[in-house]
Picture (tube, protein in one colour):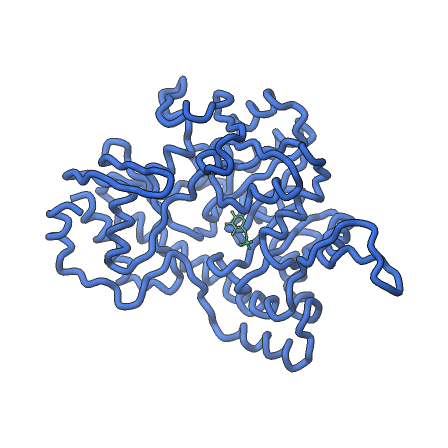
Length: 422
Ligand SMILES: *Cc1c(COP(=O)(O)O)cnc(C)c1O
């Protein structure tokens, strides 16, 4: 850390209790629904809580059918299977995302082709998606995420999928409660996924849900998620199944949390706005969204450092370092500073095409295929970095966004970030 930074933030004490990126915020009703499951002995994968979660999700998201599952990843897996892929098929997938968007494509023996990111919402770039269809016209499945709770370019992506007769799988794991033109994420694609993992906007401690308007598809998911039993007096099986159903205990937690969804979103929005206000005058911007058409759930607040304000930062496969410089900073310096004061930030989700396990997969930018190794500093015809995901990863930081963080704590986080730019 720079000497001036140390001097400027020298009188700030580390947080006594860790300030988290995003941790479960519990309210008490969860326990009542768990107790109900306990007292009625519905302690397995059926019961009133599971039924309630499915009903509430349909109502809130505006989808015909919801199937409660053991995780968002399980839901993604079954969504990919529902899309009707065969082993060896190629599937287009958001590049800048959490790995659980992409892995289910591999579970089904298919090859993810990663589609680069745009700067306006940090989601799948429709221009790159269209390019990908030019290169691989046979692809019939697209998996698109709404990263950090911000809806992507929904109209453009839907139109492209429609034109190419492709199934759209929406990974709304992080974006429950966010909407685009008044339509909730989780109801936009053909098969849609929301997660209740411990760090999401509401949690079941674990769990996920698959949403679709297709009743027959929902019935298949119910069957596949309970070992694909046939209707027979004994265990009868004609196809491959999984143990992916949500427990009635977990569903109790989700049911209790659901009562606080809007409150959590309001809290996250306030956090985002406080950062935005607090960073005025610094060479950073917040993770952007389409202010006309979309209403994010503000799950995570992130900042992006202006290119001119970046100090030198070196990131290897497993390590990071930087060279401090007056008036400049970088994600590594900010994250180290936050950690020193017992606050949890995180790098932007490292894009899939930069992951060792996926670096050999095709990666399509707005100008076409980008070969591995070629990427890091290439510039597009518009003068902007060609590899947008890499650029956002290099310059972006996920900030502490926990619903339990107080305004006073957040003001300290803001001071720490400001200190990095001294
Ligand atoms: C959390 C997450 C998932 C997976 O959900 P789990 O419930 O943790 O399995 C999938 N995609 C994205 C983008 C996520 O953030």
